[in-house]
Length: 216
Ligand code: PMT
Image 1 (cartoon, rainbow, N blue to C red):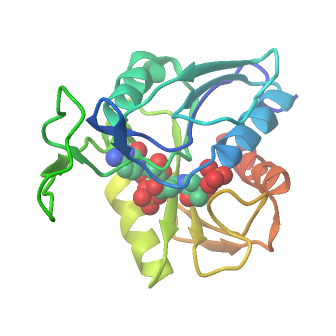
Image 2 (cartoon, protein in one colour):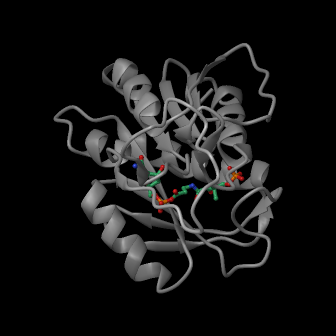
């Protein structure tokens, strides 16, 4: 099997950033794309560590260890605990870029007509791994809504990815929650490889195959 002896870290799903004990800021990621990647890597012989934000997707495979996390900072900690032992890392999670600066101890009561919540930046997990001296083979995602290729090139550069998986909210059948996705891969050499709309299972195969070609 092509990934025999390889350790693969995958982040998946959304993160939830607490506002108070009953509310959070989140996004529409279901975890399906990351789960498909985890199963595909495991099928190809890898030992997979799937670090997953809140998701109801069920992932069952004897070679997948799932680590459930809630917030971006939890995900950051879980990633950095193991990343030095990994050969490949794939960042498919939709991580919240910002979190509420203060988390209310009690449920916020309804009072004024407007409520202001101050947000502060979360750590960029992918960029932090891209900056490591001994980084694993690094695969990032970019979810864009406009000027897709330019934004994706900028992310690949900034986060130091070996492969970047671009998906666009403008493509029908791509992105959050759906069972399909349409991706374009951007390589380290700035090569652009487009793919057709496919099931997330097939998309995961394409991504893992491209990784296998490049780690040999
Ligand atoms: O979960 P599904 O419903 O199946 O949907 C799949 C998906 C649309 C979530 C997935 O295909 C996808 O595009 N994931 C990345 C979503 C995203 O947040 O992209 P971004 O362009 O904001 O982030 C760029 C990259 O940096 C991503 O690899 C992200 O995981 C990473 N990142 C971002 C912010 C942050 N604080 N830490 C990070 O690691």
